Image 1 (cartoon, rainbow, N blue to C red):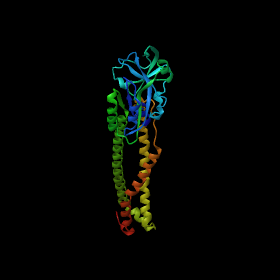
Image 2: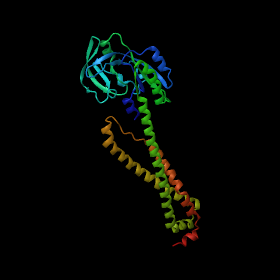
Image 3: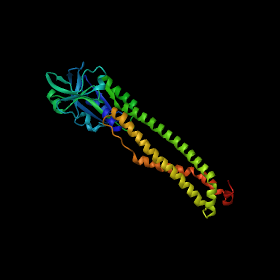
Image 4: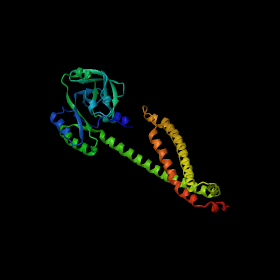
Length: 320
């Protein structure tokens, strides 16, 4: 999931200046902003791109891996191509992936093929060779920022907005998306844990009830075993082993069925939405679940086993 989000929002915060260059003073103030772990200047030039209403910075970033969550893959563009953030231009964007457009900086121009991406704001990303054909005087037109692990997205965005507004720069706050998704995943995780807890309680009650009925129905059998020399401790162990076996077998069966349903859901829904997604089975976590189920079964057997052990052989054999 993190890899998928990293591809869609590779930059935590991107400050882009379409009107003028990013000054050294602005870069220093960005780096001193609380919550900023690293910030790099991104060189480029203001260009006119056919199909876009306004001029945009065309940039290249040789050090993008320092701040990008996808390792800088989004900014590694082949010569002859331009990668545009499709979300930054909204639904009115008339360009399509694969279109060839003319990109002009001053009296220089290049014919480039369009590719799309998301997460770095209103700028076109090109290869260093492509930028060199468009201008000999590249200047910083953006700052790409990697936030620290404890950064607050709203606070960081507000602080950077204060720095960006006076120079006419825009802010693309991908960190908010990360936080929003983390919150959603947290809600889903705690909801799943809550449901799992309820299921464990129900399982405990079910196993205890089953063993309790078994103790009543097999009272004569237990009494016979006691008369033949089975001790109270051995009887309790026998019932505990029965409970553990019952819970572990049920858990393994439920795990197999659950993984099967997960695979069906993955093939039916996930692969259609995320073509490069892969299904990973958390074997270690499933093993822990089986272990917890065994312990829960052992706990559920305590009261029925104690009840069975209290009955004397004579009293048990006299029961109908």
